[in-house]
Amino acid sequence: MEGQIPTKNSGKAKRVLFVCTHNSGRSQMAEAFFNEYAPPHLRAISAGSQPAERLNQTVVNAMKERDIDISSQKPKALTVDMLDSADIVITMGCMDSNACPAAFVPTIDWGLDDPEGQPIRIVRQIRDAIESMVKQLIEQKFNEKLTSP
Image 1: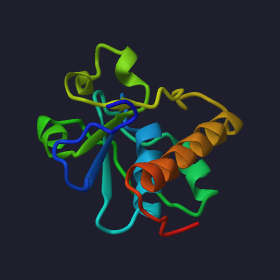
Image 2: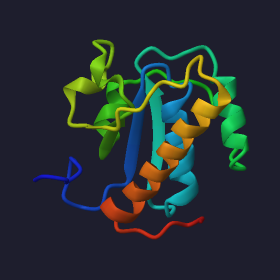
Image 3: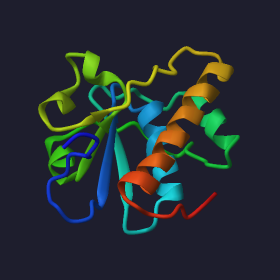
Image 4: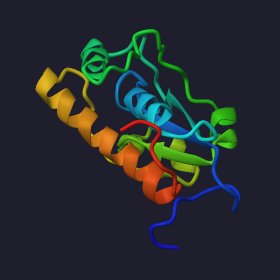
């Protein structure tokens, strides 16, 4: 059905998986915003098809501007178990890449630019777009109220 999120069951989704190539920027921001704004029965995790060694420091700094500290997060490798246990998989633009194993499961692709190597002003734009999309996901697709403004 047009506009519907692909889910594994007809019940309320409980876990969202955000996927990007390196899990050092976009998907980490989406995970943090989702877990900040969603009610406790909805949780997000993130992973990458080719995880980086560490988070993008500009992304960490941009999130600190929103009072969200992701500095202790580590990039995680995407696994089949993660894909299997997710109710919804959202990719951050990696669907263009052959390295995106999420291409083999139903996903929603947000098609966001990669913040790697970008100046802080561009990273802020990406961060703000992710924040807005996460809020819309929680409010419109899950019909839930945000737990933070």
